[in-house]
Amino acid sequence: MNEKPGNQTPNTPGVSETELRGMKVDELRQEAREENISGVSDMRKEELVHEVAEARSSGEQRKQDGPDSVGAGPDDGKIRTGEASSSSLKYSQQVTSPEDEPEREGRSLVTTHHEVIKQWAEERGGVPATVEGTEHGDHLGVLRIDFQDKDNNLRRVSWEEWFNTFDARRLNFIYQEQRSDGSQSNFFRLENPDREDA
Image 1 (tube, rainbow, N blue to C red):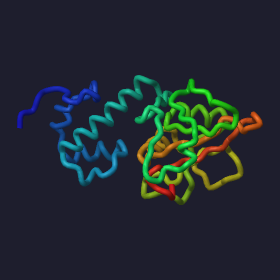
Image 2: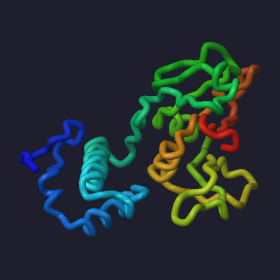
Image 3: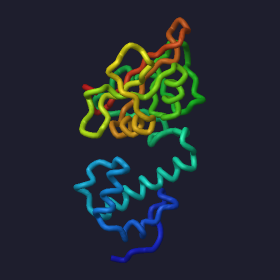
Image 4: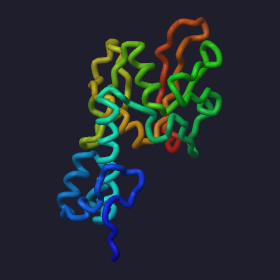
């Protein structure tokens, strides 16, 4: 096999895949697990190199952006569609940037844009959370936004954990900015377009 030196993947700047290929498979698996990459035990070395390079690259990007910077997410805010997409998804206004405004009060909106979701939640005093007891091993369970109501079965998590799970499950965030009477709305729901029971 003819290995070229340096970085062969243009979307992983600043990450040396040559260095990664020099690591043992067990070391790559360990790093992949620390980066919360799933399916690590079934991956071959080249797949591990690719996944770890991607994870390191996104980690470098997070460092450059700063700890509170969330960004757009992998789909740039665009909705995810599938066989189980609901009709409410079809009739919702798509929001792909924090600058997008609802067409009218009470309009149903949909996004996958991380910064839009975080901004919406924080304006309402909401923090990322998961429902206690619904976890799958070390993976988060049902995702929620905790508005600090009386619901005691929520466990707060970091935005990073919340968005990693949100993206891994290919969820859409359907929400409202205001009710039709103009008052602030806390309504939201998460939808997986591939599963009816999301």
